[in-house]
Length: 219
Image (cartoon, rainbow, N blue to C red; front, side, top):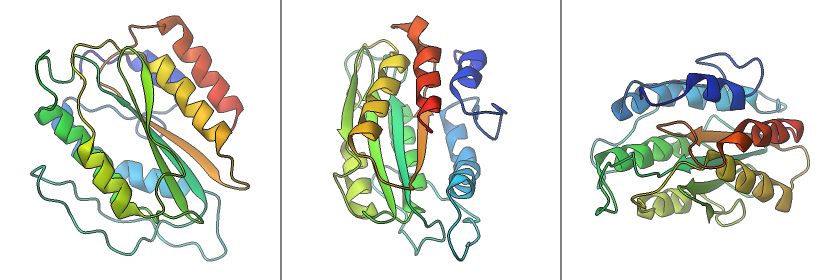
């Protein structure tokens, strides 16, 4: 959205910090669906090569209604990879202090579901974690919580919006680093996907430093 700081997005992304490669911008929440295929392809291309490389998925479908979900097909995106989604659920997502979901929040969950659907989730393949943050950051799904994609997707559907919160992106990054550190896996590619609709408002002076620490750890 217009509230997003592109300078911050660029600074917390991975080198070479190019738009539509290491960070992506959408004009509104509906624009997330258009980014899903690009990001899935990028995730698959960034993982360490396997003996028989397979092509990246050519399409990603996000659900039109919260109650309907696309069926996962056998994934072409394979290899040892650990992915953690760091998800902003600050007050500006729904602009309402009295609700625990809204169309924008459901769109963010559908976006994650669309990405997870195309991953080969398993203890020996891709592990998926989710962190949510507002004033504080919390581990919602650990890397070792689930061993298959359907269970991860089922959990993602149940994550509630937490109204009237600030944007503590730096805290989300720190919890993400801790989860990677606490659950290491030899030779796995480490990927963080940060989803936010605005610039940091809490501990904002630490956001870029924490991102640099993550990069130094190979994330």
